[in-house]
Amino acid sequence: MIKCHIVQDLLPSYIDGLLSAETEHDIQQHLQECEACRVLHAKLSTSIDNVNLHVNKKEIDFLKKVRKITTKKVVTGLVVLLLIFALLTYFFAIGSPVSKADLIYTTNVEGDMWQINMELTNGKALLVKTEPIYGEKDSNGVKPVIGVLVKPRELLPSLILESDNTSFMFGSTIDSFNKSGYKVILRLGDSDIVFTSDNYDK
Ligand SMILES: [Zn+2]
Image (cartoon, rainbow, N blue to C red; front, side, top):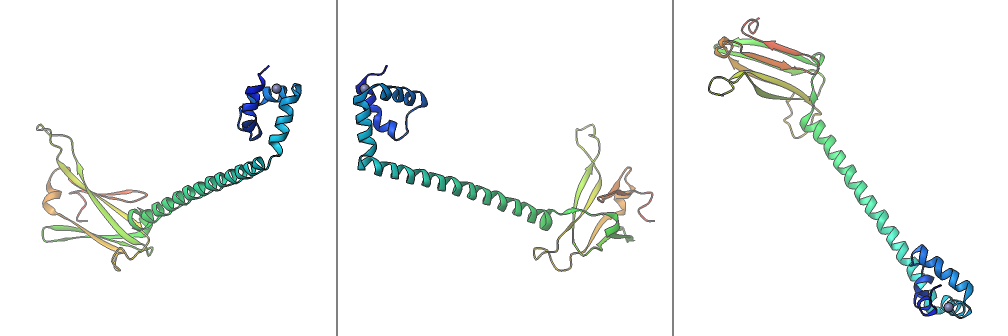
């Protein structure tokens, strides 16, 4: 059994529903058994101050709810924006691999240069990235360059790239092909086309 003065101290918080379930239960029990505290409780519950307090609390709850919803909306908005940005980047700047059916390529030898010309036929913009192919480490721990990987990618046509951007030329010296093992790999979405000293001029 809690003492009356403790119950009375707690009554305002009790009325505002700020107490733990356990304490609330104890006070409920006390109120059932104690006339003096019950009277005070009734008085406090109906006082105008208290009515205001309740309204305020409702307002605060409402504001809290609004803030929660707003925060949620802002976060959702940011996520959506990021997604859109990622998609735009993908379509306009990174692109996707080109399939063999969408690319025409021709090769030719001019002087000591070998060239491969690529043209995208599906109306999208062509972006070609090249990177060296490295061989096994030699005795000095250096990885020699033994070829070039040519990676055409297709992008949605955009203002970022120039207007004539469906074709691309890559060149390599004939000397390179004469090095043993040298190759140029044209990496398409569905296959690799490999040019070596055996077939570069065919
Ligand atoms: Zn009491």
